[in-house]
Image (tube, rainbow, N blue to C red; front, side, top):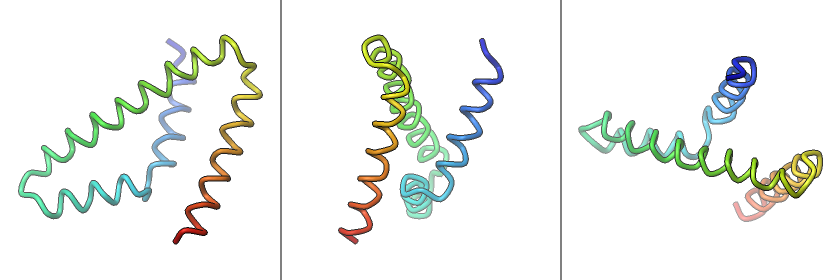
Length: 89
């Protein structure tokens, strides 16, 4: 296992997730419930599931498409979605 890659991925995902809409939704669910551990487990399973899908989908796509194109497409998609969210309020 490449520890540098794992720690880099952890750090970047951790920072990217701080204050995002998923974290705020989890905060809201926890505030409304009397069971923060249940909310934590549900939110954790959801993040693990989406990360699992992204990691293995990325590996599969990289067999057919060069990684520099995948990075560019992801960047463009990120920008487009950001603009759409800003426009739609």
